[in-house]
Image 1 (cartoon, rainbow, N blue to C red):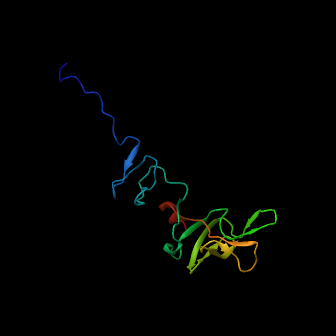
Image 2: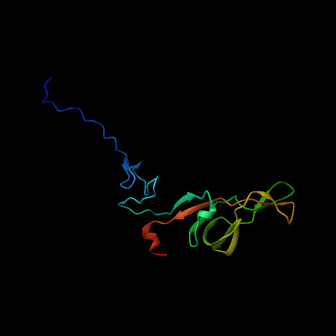
Image 3: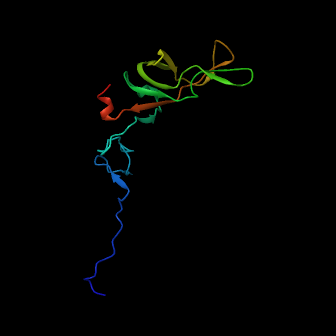
Length: 148
């Protein structure tokens, strides 16, 4: 065999993946943002929905941040047959103020208090349990941010 024959094509190591220009981390080909640093990628078609990231420490939130309360979380009442009724509606809220054990937030139904402290029985009734809300921070794509 001579050197004039073409070599077999070597597989491209980035096929089906893309590298972030900011931090160099390899991401999936359909990723809208870098999984490591959050840099948005230029895409032919813009993202249709918002990007949600779980909130580990609510004190890192700032006034005006958009958050989503995950259903089945927060303070609840336990009936005699063990069924739980949650007091907080799931959905999107805007942070108004951060307090010691929670967040004042504005949602579709008005302003409410999202409890974020440790899970414990309520001082009001034994059937009520104060449990922290599960939150996700919502990042809107650039084309949706400008419409707000």
